Image (cartoon, rainbow, N blue to C red; front, side, top):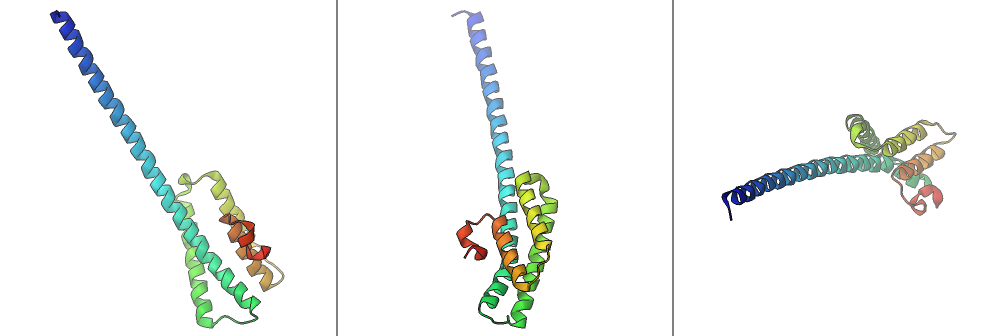
Length: 150
């Protein structure tokens, strides 16, 4: 083997090593960024579903009381109302601060929910029944789990 061949082999090995190291680092960085974005998205979704769950508790507790022809204990009603307010504020804050992470379909579904919850109904029962149903629809529960479908 001549000096030229040895030099060519060494140069080729060096270039390939540097190229593969660069490519590996680039792919690893891309994966890291994707995983971080996914973790953040997962956190946002978890907080959204948590807020929707807390909001739905208010409607479901009132529906349950209506079905039993009973009144909620004032302390329980205050606790549910405060949890609802906090959940709604948390949902609003999360949507405002993390809009760029969420797909348009998710934002549209929450927007539809907000419009549906802002509609007024003739009776309190219609209000709570519709609220529970709309929140269930927003989190895409199967129809058999919606109180309005029973």
